[in-house]
Amino acid sequence: MGKGVKVAVVGGVFAVMVGGAGYGAYNLVSALNGNGGGGSGAAQTRGSGPPDQDEVRETTDAFFGAWEKGQAAEAASYTNNAQDAGALLSAYGEEARIGRVDITPGAPRGATVPFTVKATVSADGVSKPLRYTSALTVVRGQTTGRALVDWKPSVVHPDLKDGDTLVTGESAQPPIEAVDRDGTVLTREKYPSLGPVLDTLRQKYGDKAGGSPAVELSIRHATEEADTPLLTLAKGEPGTLNTTLSAELQAAAEKAVTSYPESSVVALKPSTGEVLAVANNRGDGFNAAFQGQVAPGSTMKIITAAMLIDHGVTSMNGPAPCPDTATWQSQTFKNLTGMEPNEGATLANSFLRSCNTAFVKLIDEQPLTDASLTEEAQERFGLGRDDWKTGIASFDGSVPASGGPDRAANAIGQGQVQMNPLTMASVTATAVTGAFRQPYLVSPELDGRQLAQAKGLPAGTAAQLKEMMRLTATQGTAQKAMSGLGGDIGAKTGSAEVDGNATSDSWFTGFRGDVAAAAMAQQGGHGGDAAGPIVAAVLRAGG
Image 1 (tube, rainbow, N blue to C red):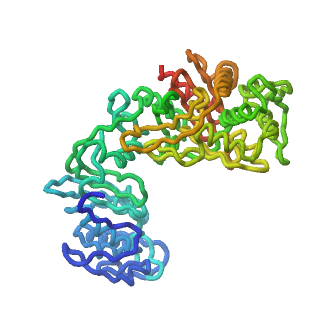
Image 2: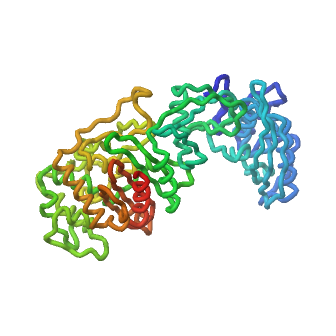
Image 3: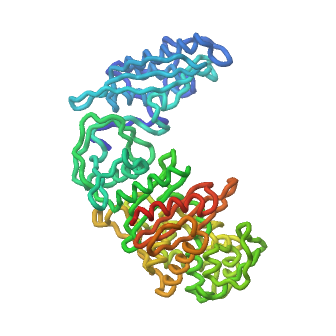
């Protein structure tokens, strides 16, 4: 929180400041009834139905007039939630230090009135102009029948949500200049999907990067989300924050995800665990690549195959029959349409074709239990223990011990299993190196955090997994997406059926040399359809 900054929370229950700077008291009892405080200039009509044009004009004129004069309580009295409106409008002048307000209404659209705000933000002897547009809607008060502004925080500023507040002062953290592994500056303008990541890095590491804070008008969110700067009055001195990212791979990842809606990708370096790229194509700013929690489909078969090999159930060249259907605990599992059955298939053959029934049939073998897949994921791959410390918020997967039909469903990446591109890229890295190295975006040396540990895989298991992934990339379901890539390559495809969606989620994870990448495209179809080209593009950029 900035120095000397006071906070007024939207939606909280507290009294508005009274006295001074033209702020008048208002009837708190009336404010609590959801019908405003009966301002002196309000339209006093008692009626029913939508407000008419005269009522809309009179109410907005009165509301804007009081707002322009800094009369927070008076302006709030023209709304249907005077308490919350008064709190935020008071903070507008006090905590946010916004004055000289001039509001120009646009042409009404029924009861909705767009408007433009011109104002001045002043702090520490510096003033800057502020301009933005918003809108309000006039409604009928439920008990008084008065025409009132339907209160929402976005009336005051379009980016405000419930619980947010506006503040002006020294930023909570100094600005940072995030740089990639070679010193290239990473900006949200050049790498758009890094925007939320850079905000989080500033919030977490700004005070460790050696910079000095700026003076800003910002939205302080009710959640733990980083402040959102709206206007800089005085620039701070940015500190340099080194990341593990590769500008070249990040650019490739940013471009690749734009081809598929709701898609995410992560690339990392298997030999170290360093994250090389993270990109999301989403409208909500959510870092699904790191924080998503969704079924990974058949990419999960990497872990399941490791479990089968480690427990001596079968091996790469051992039996893994692939019938048309397989039944487990009264639930019948099928393969993709058109897959030919193969009762004499090996594990490698069923893996490269992504045969569901082969894996379902084998999970009943001794000595496997309901907990075997969970133990493999946690002890060998470092998943599902909630102990990763990547440098920003992340989810490290969930593979719960499941009985009944979910034991089989989990084995093929459905049921209760949840992953994201970060965890699946890590799974590939562990599979091809045999060692679990927790992914990270910022060196643990910066803040002394301890990275998660796991046993990793026996050398023989890792060698078999890597070879099966090579076969999948050159002869199996990943062949089309990986075509044209030279060097040592491997991959695994996945399709995850999600309840309510007409099309499955597309999953793909692969490696090329010392780069592993995984991608997911919601409702993207089969693994090679959407996620495959994303991963291939990133691996191609890896050289």
